[in-house]
Image (tube, rainbow, N blue to C red; front, side, top):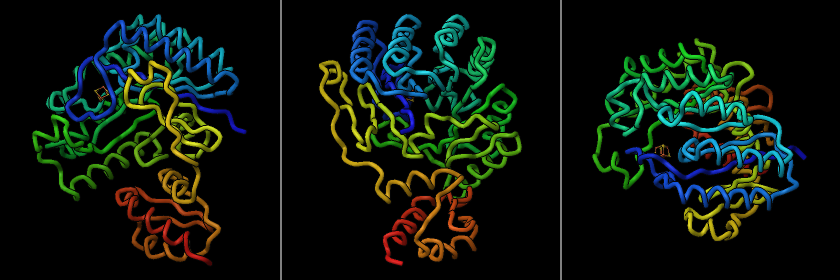
Length: 356
Ligand code: SF4
């Protein structure tokens, strides 16, 4: 069996961003202390599972500070016999050169910065706490601290975003020592301050143009697309996230964390109080059905092989339209196909369910 990934959810943030509906809480020192102890408890409970990727996501994991992060890393090494890719998410304003050196020293070898934009007006609309300069300094400081696998997120289809403003952000990104870039389309989540302000967003055609420009710009800068929203220099795709899409096991711990072990999916409640009491996760049922596998695999640019010839035959018109590529019995979506991935995946699932 392949080794597992370990995901630790750290639900603390310095301030709520205007578009965010993730489970996150104010960074209260005493609650962060209790939460770290609860994670140590659950890491110890998983003793014996071997892991080769670790991902601390949030929230803003770096807000835990050096001492608590070191405790978590030690517990992961001990109970999961961990060695491999170890990622920590960070916001640019939440790191100092000292903390970055400590993170590298304790065993993190990959850092993912939530940058989102290099335009002041966009960062302020998103209620991010950093400036473009601070983001740049944080990435350079991470490199200086020893990190050679550095990722940054960029957000597409922001209000008033144009090819020029996005192109500016991408050009600043590609001039930095990044090995990985995640590019997400802004989703307006009901009840968030940004959604409540009813912003005018780029329309469908403009959004498509922004996405395709991102794929093209990053490709030219040496970042190969390997997933609908993810781009990496040669050898740097995120191994932890690949486990999700390739149906490999992962342990998820923390309030609101999801996991999948021995082919069963589970989720902890989005409620820190319940998590702290040691309440077990909810069983979400068996993983790996045909529909789920198609949904996950077709997010990857390598696509998926189909034994059912109806799938391949039925998708030929989409190939002629430039939305998919078919090589033998393998089907993969093109960047234009990714823009309508829900429709294409739905069609594949429907075809796959038909008898040959
Ligand atoms: S830092 Fe991330 S998790 Fe925290 S509020 Fe902002 S978007 Fe949400």
